[in-house]
Picture 1 (cartoon, rainbow, N blue to C red):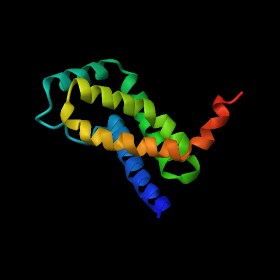
Picture 2 (picture 1 turned 90 degrees about the vertical axis):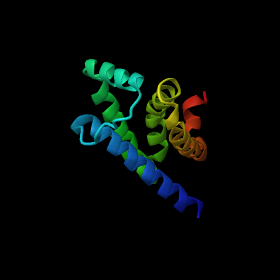
Picture 3 (picture 1 turned 135 degrees about the horizontal axis):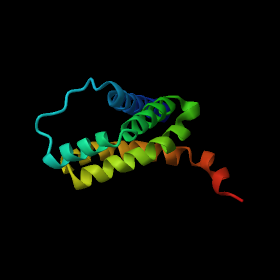
Picture 4 (picture 1 turned 30 degrees about the vertical axis):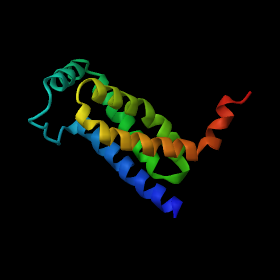
Length: 126
């Protein structure tokens, strides 16, 4: 039962990150009209730095795809973690209303990391 729950959560999280990453390339999701002014300013600053959005979009698509499959899930969680940290910090500073969603995503990614901790041990052992 735990494996099925983990699969469904990772599938939904992975698809969400893939969607968010693809939107950074194709801009198909509309920007909400009630975004805080600080968030709009941040988004404009990210667009001025021409290489940043494609980089984050690529990491989101790659990490989301890796997260879906059991064999690559541990790598996907580590790839997504820096992006998720940026999302958390942005929501803390600019739009605290998004914190519950970020909290759920962090909980899922941490569960994946803890569940796959034995795969990370060779990196820190001497």
